[in-house]
Image 1 (tube, rainbow, N blue to C red):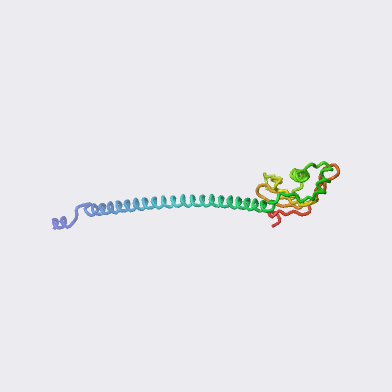
Image 2: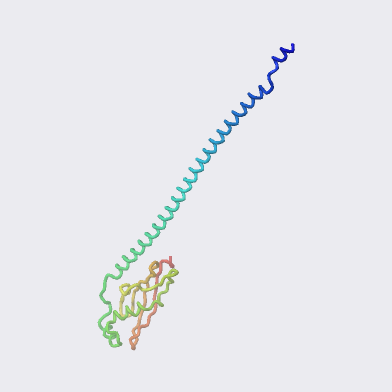
Length: 192
C-alpha cells in the first residue's frame, strides 16, 4: 500500500510548477497589455498635443486676420474721408467778392484767400476735438480749408484717425491780423 500511496502522491512542487508557469504567463500578458496601453496613451497624448498646437496656430492666425480686417477698415474709413474732402473742396475759386479782397489788401493781406487759409492752418488751438493718444489734431493741408465768404470758413481737421469739420467766422482787423470764432463743429468720433 505504501507504493500505491506513493504513486498517488504527486512529487513535491509538481502543481506549483504549473501554477508558477501560469502566473508567469499571466504576468507577461499583463505586461504586454500595460505596454500596449501605455503606447496607446502616449499616441493619444501626442495627437492631443498636436491638436492643441493646431488650435493655437488657428487662433493666432484668426487674431492676425482680425487685426488685418481692422487695419483695412481704418484704411477704408480714411479713404472715405478723403473722397468726402475731395467732394467738399473740389471748387478752388474764391467766394470773396472783389470789394472785400480790396479791403483786405488795404489791411495788409496781399493775397487774402491764401492769408486767411494760412492763418487758420496755423491755429491748431481752435480745433475743438482731442486727438487719440500719441497723435496731433491739425488741419492736414490748406486744401482742407475753404473760404466761403468775406467772413466765413469751412475747415476739416484730423489726427490721422479721427476726422472732424468746423464752420468758423473770421474778421480781418485793421492791422491785418485775423480773429476767429467757432460757429459750429462736428467730430463723429465724439459726437456719435
